[in-house]
Length: 97
Image (tube, rainbow, N blue to C red; front, side):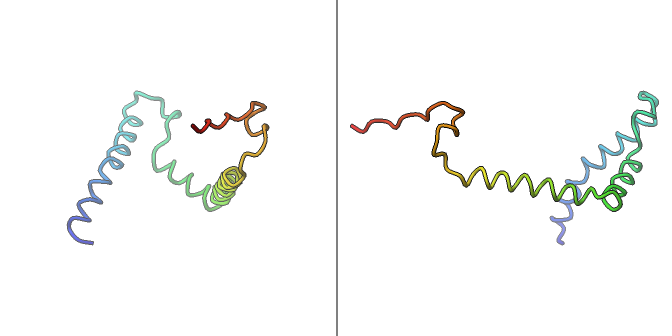
């Protein structure tokens, strides 16, 4: 990766690092009860546990597959009846002059 690529990567990471630092600051400041806002490392650990041991990755795959399957199915069926329009007749074609 050249210097421009590293600079771009660094500029892309700055907001994320800032958000995580702000998260830690809010948690440790006492403005919010610590039982209401977990630390970022606790959230990351739980996310990793859900991905690896609780089947979250499989759940994400199944949901994504179902969504794309429904989208593919809905877009591949042309509307040939009034039921496609919720009982309302489709608009009439414009008359040609």
